[in-house]
Every structure is written in C-alpha cells, then in structure tokens.
Image 1 (spheres, rainbow, N blue to C red):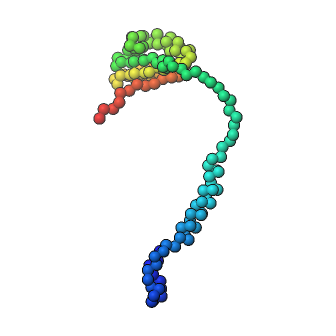
Image 2: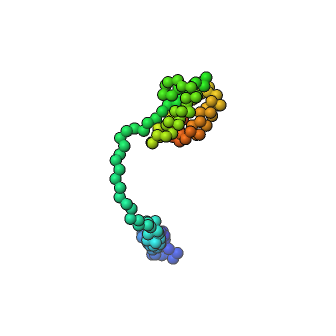
Image 3: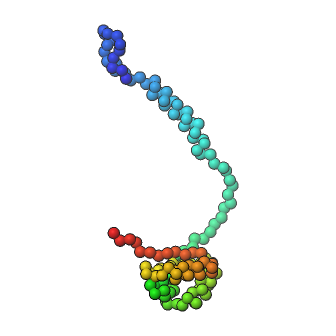
Length: 139
C-alpha cells in the first residue's frame, strides 16, 4: 500500500493497487492450520451403545415440609410433632423408593442446637434428599 516510489519523475505518482501477496500468504497459512487441527477437534471413539426404552414418570416428586419455629417446635407438613416421633418418620421416608425430598424450613431465631440435632438425626437414619427453604433477599 505505497503512495509513491523513490525515484522522481513520471513514476512518482501514487500507486493505486494493493499488494495482495502478504494477504494471500496469511490466508494460506491459516487454511493449513485449520486443515491440520480440524480432525483433532472432532476425534471421537465409536461405541455401539445398547438401546433401551423407559416410560416417563408423570407424577411429581413427593416432598415433605419439616418446619422448626423459634421455640424449637417441629411441624411435619403443618402438623406439630414431638422429637421422639421425628426419628420414626425419618426411618419411614428413608426406606421409600424413590425417597421423598425433605424440605427443611427453620425460623431465623431458631437455636443452632435444635437445627443441628435434626440434621444429625436425618443423617443417621439415612435421609439423603434434604433441601433448605429460604426467603429471597429483599432490596
């Protein structure tokens, strides 16, 4: 992309053509790089997988709400229960297949000891599907 030459005279006019050689060289180098690397990106191992069919479960997953209020009282799906009955209910749901999800709601003022006891009891009885329910932060 020169605008003129070094000699004076008639050939000192601006050159109106673009030198395409460097652009073609860069394009050819990129083409070779893509040709070499493209097979490496699509390399896959062919495996003959078995075919299977399964029915889609239309029933929603079962869930149980366990609420702990500020005084440490327990509520199983909105019904008050005692701590002694909680272990029996945990054993019952841990034996179900599929296991229902235990959704734990604890009031902000609940003592940590009560919450830790409930979580430890759930772990020792085999409850594996546990979720904590919280309120979103208001801005």
